Amino acid sequence: MPLKDILVHVENTRPGRSRVAAAASLAARHDAHLIGLYVLHLPDIPGYIRVQMTDEVLQQSQMAAIADGAAAEAMFNEAAQLAGIKAEWRNVEGNPLKMLALHARYADVAIVGQRDESGDSGPFDPDIPDQLVLAAGRPMLVIPFVGEYPVIGDRVMVAWDASRLAARAVNDALPLLVGAKHVFVIAINPSADEDEGHGEIPSADICLHLARHGVNAEAQHVFADDLGVGEMLLSRAADEGCDLMVTGAWGHARWRELVLGGVTRHMLGHMTLPVLMSH
Image 1: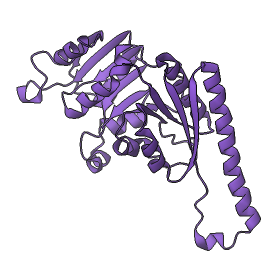
Image 2 (image 1 turned 90 degrees about the vertical axis):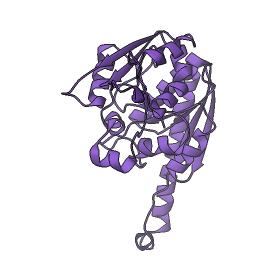
Image 3 (image 1 turned 45 degrees about the vertical axis):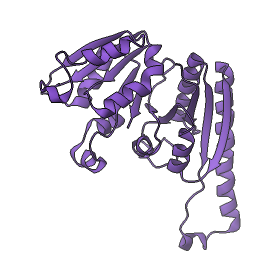
């Protein structure tokens, strides 16, 4: 069950080019149709400032945004041609979150970029990854803003806590897991309470389920008091040489995650490899 439709959020930035290259590589691996979505962002100028600006200045601003979209389209088409894939370009105007969520609903997975605190991630709301996973109803593959990721899905780490969100993430990731060379399913600080759903051997039951789908999965569990769950997951992924992390997103109400921290927020802020998230 390979991926058939992949949506990638295209920006004419350095992280945007890396993201498109990763998306094209993934589409080639799955013989998937790649959709490049560019959201035209016209400056939101308050009325009291707009009345002081000349028509020429406003027109120049609009032309710059259009030119940026044309450059992004050329970059996307070149990446698709190099990868030898079927591709489609979409240039839309509107609220970035709403447009991404809408178009993502007609794809198997949406590929977006990690927030870049340095300011090199384009003109969009930096919380797009945080909000899109809640709004789209589709799994979201977040690409770090640093690095190149030509291979995604050879060695995959699945974060397992026996929750609804983890089960949803595993199901959404099946097209990637089936094609992986090795899958590690890891439970961090699993509870011995039977009601928690881990079973006698943490991660073993979900690995058995995956094996029936032809997935070579290895069950692991770790107890650690000195590191947070997010830190431990990223550390274990580095130890195993993984190129993809699979995890559920926003296990608690989002306001609690914002106040107390949380695995999702840590992952989005400190990721060192692409992360597939589901809610």
